[in-house]
Image 1 (cartoon, helix red, strand yellow):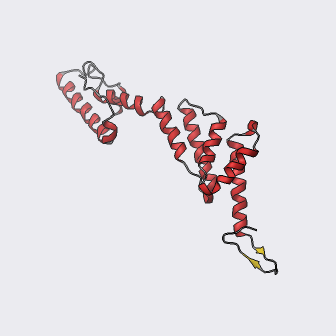
Image 2 (cartoon, one colour):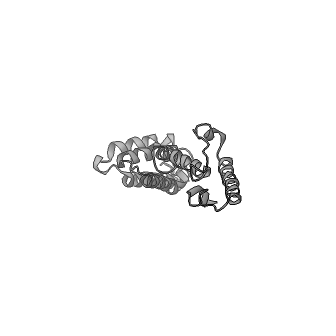
Image 3 (tube, one colour):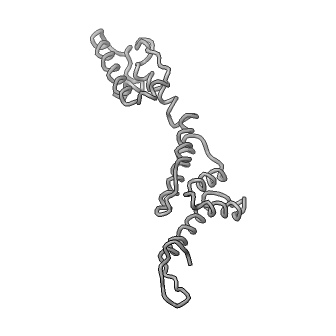
Length: 189
């Protein structure tokens, strides 16, 4: 199948009329398989002209080239898609390490796609993924971290330190004035 998509198996290379007819049928099947996996909403945005396989290596290759240009990891559409996915990520306080690692993975994918976000922007995107009740943390980090050190590494460490501290406060018993120990539910000691 891939020979049709990458253009290594061409119409012109077929020996006789029967082979060319078989090639056209297989090429259309590959095209149908590709088109059936693409949602209708994406197909409506594509400007695809049916070409004669004598002129073009294959109609499935022509579709593949259009898809790769529109949605591949190279180019503005692919970069925007990765950037948007990074913006939509959220940090789960109970799984902060893995949540932050997802940001690193998305930023690495952006680099591989040819776009390297500045460190400050990466750090700001990471802070924007904090839950709304962590806004004070985001504000504190932006005000206390030296601009030279305002990067993913520093911000990640500060977020993880704060989340560890919050988790410790929720599980550590606190003595009250009478000496009794109580576990806070809403208040911290």
